Image: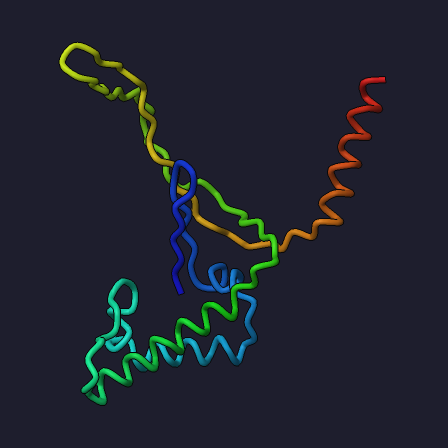
Length: 153
């Protein structure tokens, strides 16, 4: 399994077990999902973006495609819990060998232009996904604040 997510000013890539950690599913659900994908990859190839046919006289193949589309969609919806906080631990893997300052010119009309600096897009490779437990995170933040206060006094 491969995941790609666009973040604020870059991209995050994840695959295999790291991508599976984003789903809250059992091993049986995972095997079922992988089975559907491997068995019906051709039928699911148009899943993202294409709507099913609105025709009344649909063929058996079209009905099967729609069935497995719905299976895939139901799996994804049911295994992504909406009330969970996650932290994705990643490392940067894109960096230009020679950092150079690029510039971009933004033109406004015929007479006005602004020159700005550009930076390469950051690309990250996810290493693991951790569940964030709000209570423990709060306690950790409070202990850091107390430590800072102790240093200050």
